[in-house]
Image 1 (cartoon, helix red, strand yellow):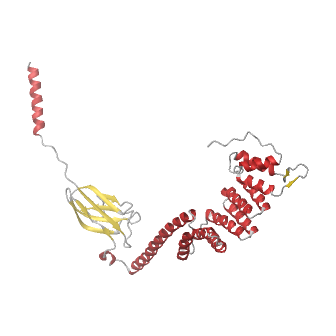
Image 2: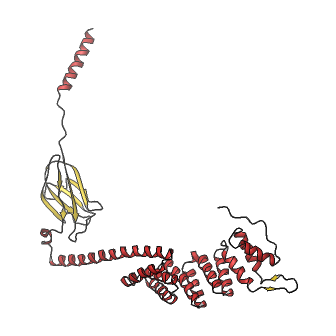
Image 3: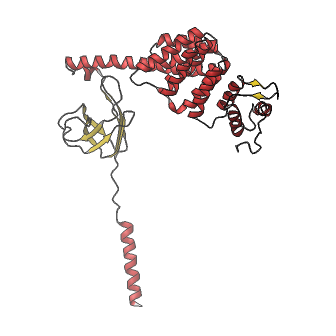
Length: 367
């Protein structure tokens, strides 16, 4: 019984002691925030900000600026500090900017910017530094102006592409005429202008514009195979429309050489254009190149067969079509690749007239 009473007395004493023992309250701290911009008005994104009590020599607190040139710091003991700004390459005994008496209050958030465009700061620059600053401001202004122009040109280019896609060729031409005058060294603008003029059947103008695109891109520091190939591809059709068949073929060859990954498409386009121009030999040659580049596309086989069948004769005794070698093979390959294609019925009819057996095993590929 005594032990129980003693234990209860000790526990009660401990509880009373705990109730009346004062807790140590954590001292309130303060914050600081601000923005940094250099003498040219550009945000400083690599700023190193320190707070010290010895004139900036020893940092008690260190913060860094973000991608917008802003900085924040918290957990700072109240007091008066020297606020200093450096960059990673600033010598330890030097500062870019400094404020000697910055007060941090408990629970407060002190605002202090490093605005190096202020008159007080600029007045301390040497004549050489001022000259460099003026040159930098001029370059920055030119860069901003150029960026604004490029932004507008990109918007116009997108609009022209949509117009050309929707066959609003006159609108696209008008827009690109304006933009090629504003920035005559941009190959992509001449390419889109040429495409619009080709759509309007202004073949001579389109030829000039597309050749300009090719010339500018080939002379640029970073040529674009896509731009040059696209310009040559469009030029091939324009030249064919002008009756310049050899030049047209050379343009398609150039497109395939510059951008070989798309050679099958360019040679396929050449075969289509040669067929439209009534050039059976050119059609066969282009189709063969397209097939060699990409044997999985059915249209070149059809165009080759169609071009060859134009040279066919009819046997007066049997009445059967006698087609040049390769005709049946081309048509059969078309049916193999596109058994339900748009030209399937036509191809089957020709093969039947030729006395060829149409293979029945062709099936439409699964989608």
